[in-house]
Amino acid sequence: MQRTKLFSLLAATTLLSGCWSSTAKYEGISFPQTTSSELTFLEENVPADCTAFAHLLMNTKERSTGQDIAAAMHKEAESKGADLVLLG
Figure 1: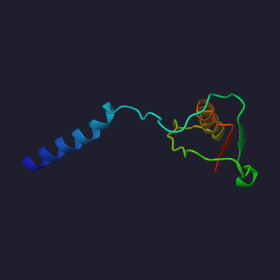
Figure 2: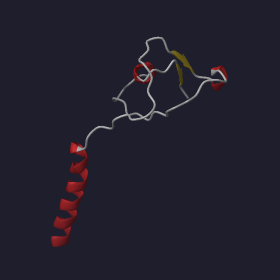
Figure 3: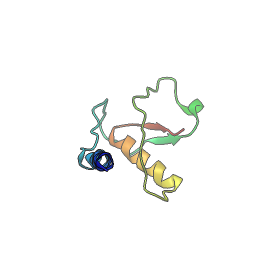
């Protein structure tokens, strides 16, 4: 019985510890914001002089459409000054 209580307390503490963690803050390369970035789905459409500086992993709301996800990624990329976004 004591082991069960201890395990339950440990599990609850582990699960709740993530509730108060701070959100991640971007600290990488950044350029002036833009509102004219382009989207592409094919690597062949990326110019040779283009440099990728980040990969984005994200969580989305339940029932998000592909358009919702692309719009969120596009907005984030433009806020970091991207002029081309490769989705793939």
